[in-house]
Length: 69
Image 1 (spheres, helix red, strand yellow):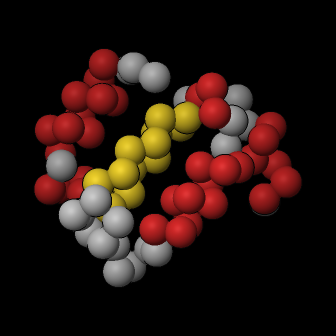
Image 2 (cartoon, rainbow, N blue to C red; image 1 turned 30 degrees about the vertical axis):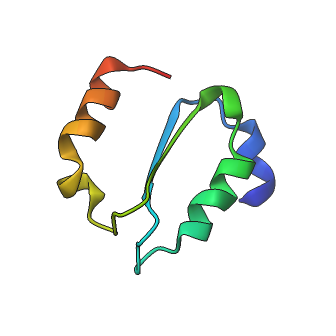
C-alpha cells in the first residue's frame, strides 16, 4: 500500500493522540509523510490517547463539519 498513498486524491483528516498506547504515534507520522499534503489535515493531540473521538469530540466534529482544509 505504501507506494500508492501518493496517488490518493481524497481529503483526509488524520487525528492522533501522542499518548496512544494502542496505535503508536509513529504510524500517524508515517502517514503524514506519505499522504498528499494538499489534501491532508493533520491534528496532533499531545496529551490524548486512543480515545480522542470521545475526548475531543466537539473539536473533531467542528473540523469535519466545517469541511476546512
